[in-house]
Length: 528
Image (cartoon, rainbow, N blue to C red; front, side, top):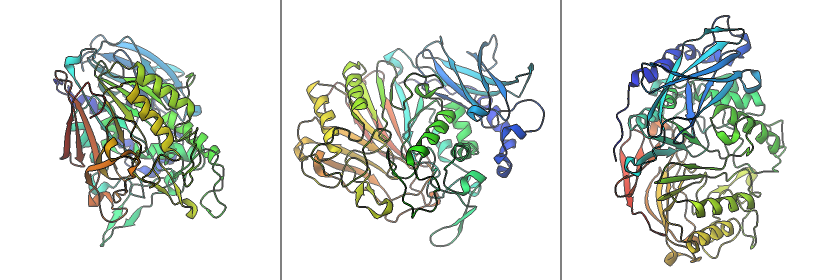
């Protein structure tokens, strides 16, 4: 596979790093943009691109006051003969964030862009442009595809630590220059306050950058928005966003740990004055849609949903799931019928249709939770389960019934090249699922790869449930719970599809980019 060298990285980072001067005093960032000093609009939070296709992409920015978003694109970093796109007016209704859709772009090309913010009353007054770049999807198989995935950012109170250089894992990922980054959920920890310091096991102190909104659990829309802004204080993340497009999904911590629709928070949890999780989820979803460029969540989008499919040329389709919004309540999960499951009926039928119509060589199912790893829900002391598996190695029960239906469908429709990617459990591992080892056997073998966290506490490996016959081929996890990022165990994964052979190689990497495990899969097979 041939990848173009990264062009003009200094120019890509110029805008986001120069703007970092506005971020050196985090306490001041709690002020609303309406109180910003007079002058030209600024974009100190950097830029992002999302859900890039062969001829389009979304560009995101946040202003420090009301502004008109303008995007210019060019084939070169000199911006000779740029094409101009007039975006939305950014105001308080979206927390001064906005996206502009670029369309009619050349396929398989490096696109340079710069975002200008104009004074709504005087379009000639614009702030310093912020620059970025991305590659559009190639329509030619020979170009191959390479992307990264991970999840779980700023969890368990481990935030941006200036002593360690902040979120350094993003710098390691940027050096690989992937086509895109799949963020597998837990993009924030709205339920995880971040204090100025935290004691490290064995002695020492972890120091955090702090903000007002991260001083308590998020309940209000402003507090959820502040959680997303917090991560953008990190220069490594802003630089990565300016270089690598993202495909983003959500899980539980964007709202509250282990949440499900209809949940009511116990009165004993005094952290929350708002007890309706549905109310919290609505506020979180709005902030999530404001801070990530997701086409199905843009203002006016008909779908209004997180789940979607990204078509990345002849080699790859990515099926982004939402295993949170449509699930049933967490429970012992041992029911013998379960029509709602973890996906909901409508999403399941959508996924089956889209898998059946896919002509891509590889079909990545981007799940925000694992299939065969047992994830308990200890919230409020109840013996419930949070993901699909519940530890009973026998015939499918509860949410496993829905996954069994999907796996049976894939087998009988002879859908080739499926594999599952996820995060959530704060360690990295590779599981191979095989009918000969399973209680439920009506499926073809498949792989599930786990990576993460990006910057959060690391935890021991989750136990396996034998219903679908998983075998853990590789795992790296601590033996203690909530190991800080200073102790290591921060991970991301890489998927590299060769344009000639069509082979897909998965590499599980640790924080500095070192490869821990590698597996190459062959194209054109129903099972591996």
